[in-house]
Image (cartoon, rainbow, N blue to C red; front, side, top):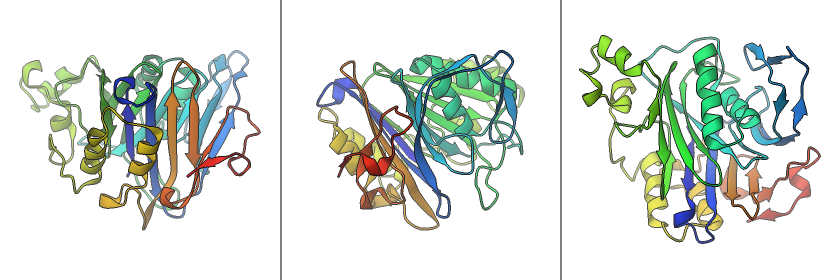
Length: 317
């Protein structure tokens, strides 16, 4: 229950890349925006993720993440190389599992290990292949799902969508792109799991590569090319398109605070955290809200200093 969006430099006022996400989580969860410094580890070090332990890499990058307190992973964040990632829950025909890497673990791993958007994408799909995704995604009740990701750096963005261990990825070449809680990549994928077409053919889900359609094949419900503007997915797409050519940080704020179709969510699920990032060669800036309801709080800029606290920095309304 989230929305992520990106506006590439060709459609923004300042020529920067703008990323934004609302993290919609169960109302009782607490989410923190935290800075974690770059670190170097001993050979053969182990990393305890939310549910499983995997080998740690030699060096991790400095990151800022928005993290539900109970898990190791993150809903969204940025790293020192100018990479930003947000994930979305998606429901597919493939089975979910009780153990594995959470989608949120994959967000943090991509940020800590990926020096560019495509490098972070490769980190995520390699870990997905090795360990799979799985585990309860909520603190107070059972909720299992698969994940999609919006991954960007200063120059480009990628949408990565998964169904268990299978995946496709589409490069965002220009303009704006948003993702919500539905699979959206049809036949335009530029890279994909090497066996996904064969798997779909063997299951009778398509006849050949010619009619392979990832979203239609793997979604648990009907997929529309044009979501209703009354849906969250359709509303965010509409607002992004309306602001092409003049997209700004102010635009991102207004979209993430929009109440039509619950983009800013209130209720049993709430927008528990929010992020806006501006990426450019002149310097990256990252703003977060770590409280429910972005409509009620100022975005505060966060640096990569591990001592940064949101209450101690200037906010933007």
